[in-house]
Image (cartoon, rainbow, N blue to C red; front, side, top):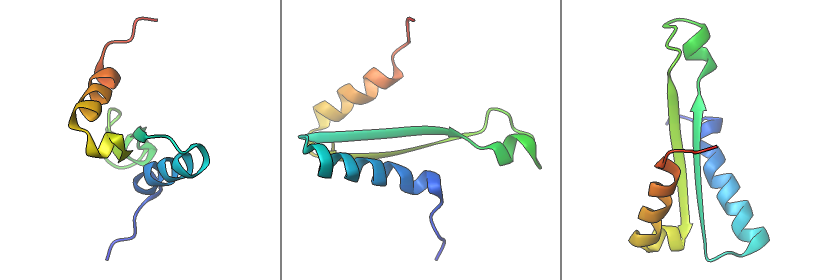
Length: 79
């Protein structure tokens, strides 16, 4: 089997730690990472990125809460 990479594991580690430490009703972790190996070596794809996520608690069980979170992170930033 293929060993998971750091960017695949990180959302689970962050989400689990937040649940243990803070005991929230829900945790949503989304990581958008640029791959330096793709942009500096080989194919030179500068816009290459991978998005990984982990939804726990309310964000996993409540479709409305999950949808609201996803809409918020995709909304335009005005700062």
